[in-house]
Image 1 (cartoon, rainbow, N blue to C red):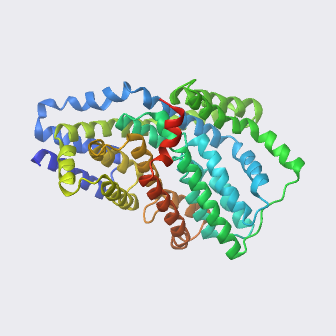
Image 2: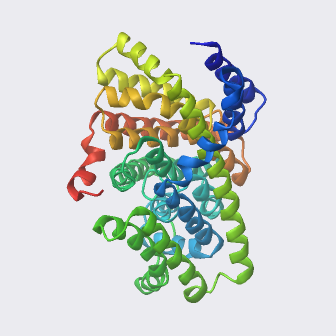
Length: 430
């Protein structure tokens, strides 16, 4: 390792220690590299920073999904979803906790964001559960755990970014996340059932058939967002980017004309919020491309690959090591850092071991989502603890069994690839 690349990582460590945002950390490290290696080529920073990103059609999907999520969050659509799910599962023991799981699965098909789920509909879920007599720490823990379904089940912004970094098909990544997302919801529902029996949590609201039918009719336009989005991709009628545009337009239409919950003032706010979110994502993406360019230019990934292959040529052991390392990183770093800094470093190894990029992408996405709910720095943990106004230590105690369930699913998906690849291979999505 030469001095230039050593300076890159040293600068990155310093930036992390002073809590500089990841995008500025990668930009600063990259500038340091060019100043040491070749000051005359410093102009390449701007070229690499913008060139590849603006030419990447896949990245257009991200701002569309962000816009759709913001429209749905600022509308009163979550109220309709909650009422519909309550009608389906409310009569069960621990019914509202079961509703928490189901609505996260449905809502994830609209937003694809764990943070949007936790900070949006999570407020309603936690307040309702506390009002019905559920322990506050459990209410927060199940809300955090179910929120991680969002970026696993399509659409998924992390998967769009992974597709940009790896060249994998966005459509296949989306389809690959469907079975793990549903399986996670089922496993969490089973856990809720047993814990509700043990603690004697109450059943939810029992709806009459007439009331449930009314709730279904009211929720139908919002539910059609998921059908439009996934149906467009499934059928091959449109690409994920085009499906995101259609679903965004539909979300606007129902917010303005059906539910009448979106006015001009809210729309302006949504546009501003989407622009800010997209700018943050664009800066992250651009600086990660620059950082990846340096890693590739210095052949760091190849050196790491050769070192790992020298230790083992068993791809199953390699996958176990990757999972352990990324789970540890997820406990101490945010998803952005892991995805933009570490994923590009291991992609050459993935190709060397002949691991399918779609399979690996879904596994890594699931791994990163577990990190969102894992102490000490899981972002969703902080969000739900603040919403529930309870102690972090108590929430951590409640969520650890759920994290164990998620890790079990992670191992199943890692070593039984067909769990992920069944739908992409069957549907032939491009």
